[in-house]
Image (cartoon, rainbow, N blue to C red; front, top):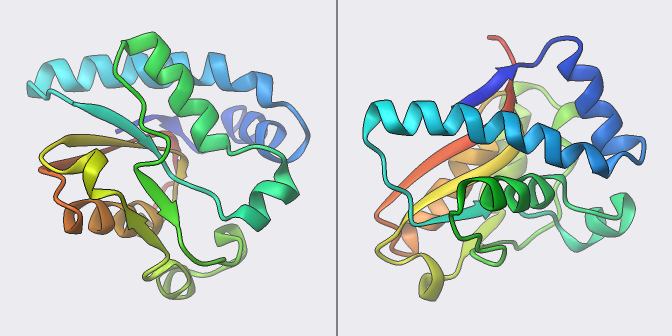
Length: 164
């Protein structure tokens, strides 16, 4: 589920949020995401146990100063009342910026880059939160790590989705 398409003005807003020092945009963006999730989950009868943000590698965190997915997840959690588990997933190796890569390179770039904490996610329905869904490779790798650690089900919620 995505709150909207990755087109203007949302595209520019996400760029400001991630790269131009505007982390305060997380709260209004998360409200859009929570509204989208509420409608979709109610229609599908989904019950989620916890929210897990897509993690950043420590080097990227130092570079950016914050994890955009974690900020979004925090406010989605606050809006929905669902508990957030910021350490459910870890990025276990540094990867290149996905935005600079083609589809095949993106898949290879994130392959095996994540590990999940079994004590947090075993038997749970986990809602992954990220900013933009482009090819789905990052979310797919995160979901694979969560499922390997015993998660019962994984759903994903993003602020925006790029068109095919």
